[in-house]
Image (tube, one colour):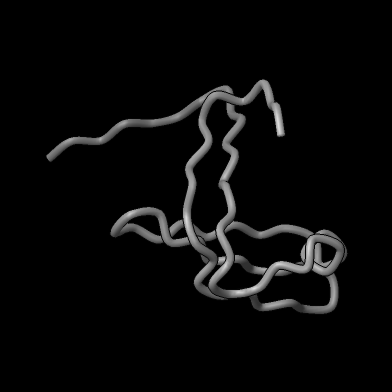
Length: 68
């Protein structure tokens, strides 16, 4: 898989909750969890399941950084 997006976070799918139209996918990246909402059709087509390795691909014009 080649992609132009530079922000690619590898992780393991923790949970997939498929609704009527949308699906919520929880991806564990290191000790953090990232939640993505995608179409239910995409989740079904990709056959996403807990325990599988996957990537969160972030393509955005703005990313905020915070520090305490």
